[in-house]
Image (tube, rainbow, N blue to C red; front, side, top):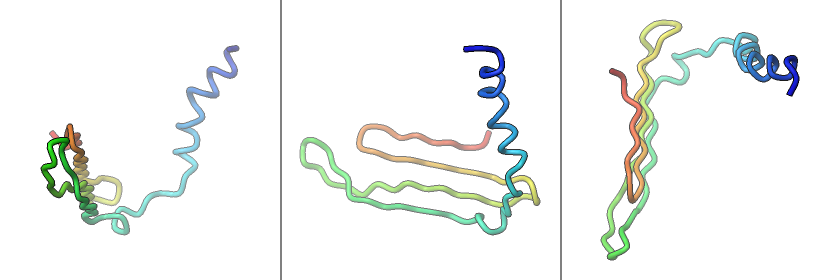
Length: 80
């Protein structure tokens, strides 16, 4: 790969992000949940829930909490 192609791959995402219109955090703020029936191999049934929470803190800052659940593992993105 030549240097120009490498530079484009490196800087293009940042240029696209800068050119994108600003996100209105007030419009996307809220709690989004998806509940679904889940189960284990032994036949045990239960309900799992995926959650995305967005709280507007200022025009350009937000608190974000995301929790994804599946049968075998849980993934969470939480603030420190």
